Length: 468
Ligand code: ARG
Image (cartoon, helix red, strand yellow):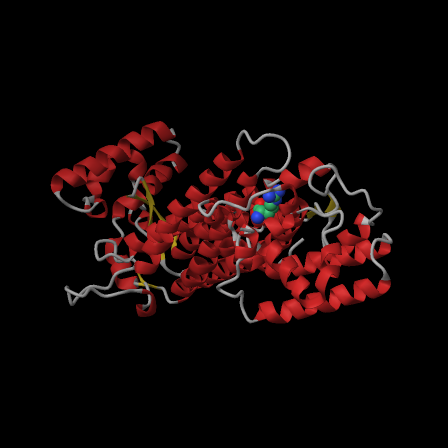
């Protein structure tokens, strides 16, 4: 039996050399249409450009080009309805070619002249990747925009700042919010850079050795919106570096988002009580009537694992591949698509949750412990001429004293301060002032109102910057 006629083998593309069709067990393993079907638009875009290039190269007559382009238009209208679920084709490239054949007959067979699925898939994916990078850039911008607005709501709110998850020093809530914005702004640079890396055109590389027809790759490049031509056809069909870069950027976004998610989970708990996430982004419990769970933040945190998994999978896939195209590369798309899909699902929800987050000022006031100002006390002594190492020790003793008396540091009697150091003669009470503490840190990047407002402005500016 002609196994290809039974459908699904794709061997119509190369059947001439084979006496037998594809084994039934091989067909599902070989098929990638379920994954790469989404590249249909890019495949048509590349095919139109290739058809024009073949005509300019004298391979296609003018009327043949017109017919092929009209046929591709009809294929496009059909695919716009969705890829038929019973399509027997191996992948999107064979599907488009078969449908073109249905539309224009044997002439369709001329389109693949000088082209291989190896340079075709590399081109389609890069076209897709450039657009995906631009979309991720927008999603990141949206989250950063939400964080900036949260920061604006938190300029006058003073929070405990943490190290080792222990109260450390007071900070403006805006400062904390922006500490999550800058990593995402750096991620934007990485995403953009991956998008630029994708902008190198492989078309014209053939299977590995280039194209023997005089197609003008430069025209192809301009027509398809690439910024450069690949320099080596063997490299071009196997280079997936840009994809690794995008998937890496995605993995790092996952890490950043998971840290933000973790802070949201912690800070919205009763124990911390610093903020509340909007109801629309929380869930209740089917059993415990009082529950309000920060699921958006937990799910955002969870995605980090999957995003890192995609990176590990992709890098492992590429390691040790021999020269030129190898079928392993077909699997690359799974990691790439999943990373982009995961982020496109997660980032908008996170942005929405941040928009709906409020600082709980009463609970924050209760959470602030005067020990957060221990460093300020030590700095006070430094201003009176005490070497910092000594003042650190003096204040450490005062903290211990307050602890043993079971009272807040700020409530220790004045004479205890005076006994600890003569430099505490006056003005100790003035140290126990949250506002004074954050205002004292007025260097760029610090917690003063001015420094934080400058930071907000700078972050805003970065958000409004057009992609380079
Ligand atoms: N579906 C294949 C992929 O995604 C297309 C390229 C196939 N090339 C080949 N020589 N079998 O990689």
